[in-house]
Image 1: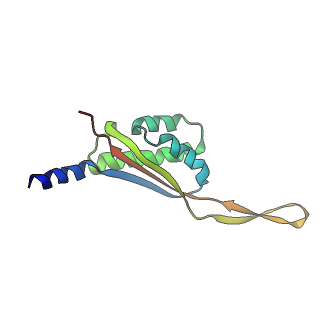
Image 2: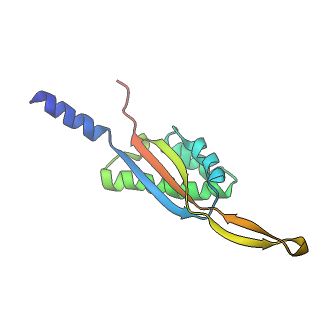
Image 3: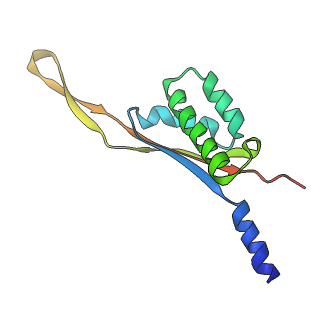
Length: 128
């Protein structure tokens, strides 16, 4: 019986919480710069860093990170001070296509890229 109790508590401690933003009108290549910058950092430090970053992608990534932190605190009763960015990745969404008129009656295809952003936060266990 003791083994099952210890396994049950181990599962509850290892909870990760995520937030997803889909169909963001920005190229994944630009968003991945911010995703790589916050990966593995404490959540509050990552949020502070994104708020000071001078990139349009940083604002979108900050909103998703804050949503993940709010989900962890409100839905899973986690401590905001112990949270860290467990995973942060950007997937490619559908690409809208259009045409751009060029010289001599030609046309070039435009690619309007979209992205799906996922940020996963976890509570870091304190070292004994």
